[in-house]
Image (cartoon, rainbow, N blue to C red; front, side, top):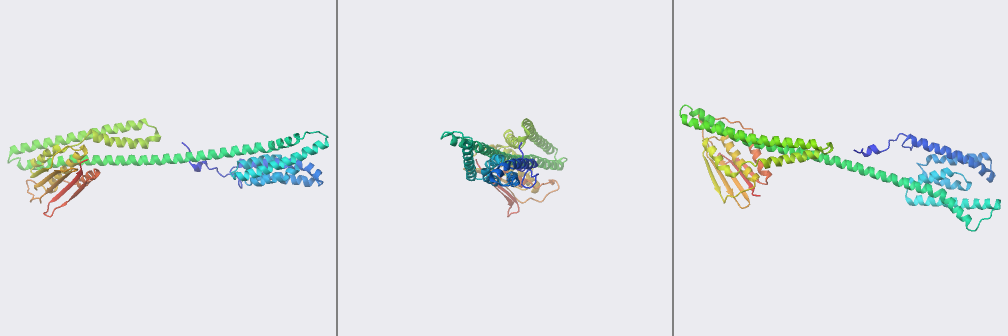
Length: 439
């Protein structure tokens, strides 16, 4: 794991313009050595120039100490070096100054111009000095040897620090670029991890919503019918024992059906949870967010694939159960029946089931009309009940309502791109309508 860009920024712990104390110590040390060198070289300069030695020494100290500001003003250091080149002083200052200039962020044209001036100055001074030495010592040089020696010595004093500075500066910029790219990649990875965690949370939320809808549909409908039959059983237990036995058998059948559906649903949840835990244990920590999203999404897909849910072929049985509970239900089917996708049939069945459950809860004994229409590109369903009759003491069965049935139906239909409408009728009843695309 890389650190952030703020961690890479150098901590300014040095005085003035230095970022670090060791940089300040290095520059001051180099400045002191350069000042001593220039002071020593100022002695022969003062003799040749005919000035007092003290003037030459002070001049050398002042010129050599300029190397202290090489990081702040590298151009000034190089200009001073060029200025003192005729005095034959400042060798260390020239080498370090050119290196610092080449390694800086200054434009290449400025670096090239100053390097050319330094080379030209060294070339002229070297040529003159070699010519004077050859005259004084009566040395004989060929026509080509003196210029060649001057050029070679000038390049030797200028090219190495310049090339080294260019290399170090380029490498420094490359490292900074790589560091910035690493920081950018880390930020992108963090962003991807956050998005993966958001997707995982969304998948978990969708799974919880789906489970809540399934549990509501299974429990609410079956238990509502069981309560209705239990109330009827209590009312006719003494008057009609045979009918009481039939109602008791119906209650038992519905209870077993509810338990079977709940057991199947819990089995899907258990297997999906174990698969998700196994996958999370097999991936590294850095990929937990992505694996969580994938596992949660697969859990939803596996749950839908393992338990396709009810189909429209079970609609007659559903209506028959409500009729057995004492509800008058009129079922009508229009159009040619054909198979649909599993989620379409399951949603259509659950809408009718929940609508009949609401009739049991809020309009017990009311006549109900269930209409199903198979159209070219969609399937439509409508469940409408008449106003409920006066509730008798024999058939009263108070059924609690959480108010989530209509919300769950609308969510199911909207998830498939359909339209859901519900509300009271002018006659005092209630109507639930839904249209779902066939594909």
